[in-house]
Length: 172
Image (cartoon, rainbow, N blue to C red; front, top):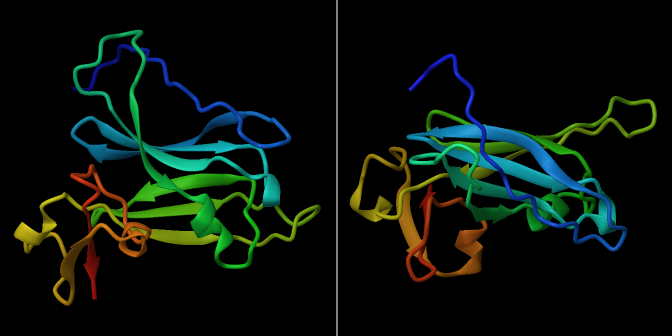
């Protein structure tokens, strides 16, 4: 429901986990529809000191004003960010979900004066309902739904929940 009134909720930030301390904050929020959102949470550490680059799912359905939002960890980005060149950027600050439910992130490269200027844009995969193997409309024409409890498949997609560690992903 859209209105011109403000409503406030509390979001529980993770505590800093880096050996250097620092702080943790929200970088971006992306709507999923139906009152659900993905939230990009990060610390202010980069390289080997980076500890928190995570995506959580929150639901604002049936929330009362001034209550604490509960969050569900959907994705720890540190392993993915480390893969391309071994360096984890400090400022993972962009989060988007396409109409086909692909999740994208990018970093803020701070320009080029005191930074390499390198930009990293990553497609994390497609958000899938748990029953994608029973729904042919979820995956593309040349894709099939594979469900597994293996970490290989888990790292390729975000899910809107899990049952007994079952993870499903569209595979070409």
